[in-house]
Length: 218
Image (cartoon, rainbow, N blue to C red; front, side):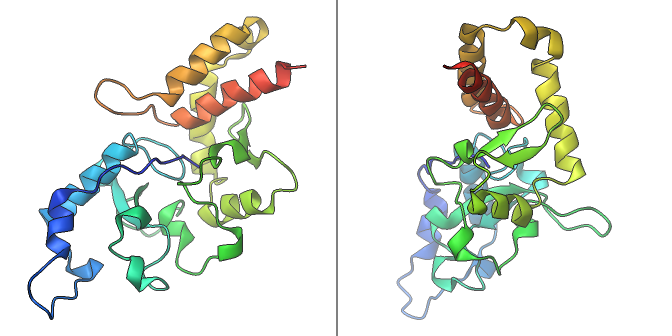
């Protein structure tokens, strides 16, 4: 899961929610362009243009506005910027596996939820060279639940994480890598480029470097 630090909401979206009409009671289904596109862009920007759950790169055309707490169960949060993120997959297509926001659905167990806004959400998961995602702590039932709920362990994502990790951490490099190099890689993959974009699966790569540092510490 990718940690998200909330920024400022799109002014166009916030202005749209306010009206002098006492009968104005907007819902998310009422939101249209250009305000919806501006909201979508602001969410992508604050996330570095990666999915809030799996962390792969996305844009306006292959992502959707995600309600962490569902509109069905939390109607009062449907237009709350703090509850909104962007998740991969724009539209559900028959035959294609669901994951991340479209897999989560409305009926998830609040007692087990981990939010992208939780400061420690990234550290609650570890990654392997073959692309697996696992709870950092075997006893962390919440982390295990979120992997299952978001389907973060499906072959589609596992294969792409494996490709990303092995491009950077090939076996020969791992035999000689120093702590300094691992720290440099961790910091690099935690950052955004000059266009404000994160690397695809950057948080996975940063976390993998962090894991190696932790494994090497006495």
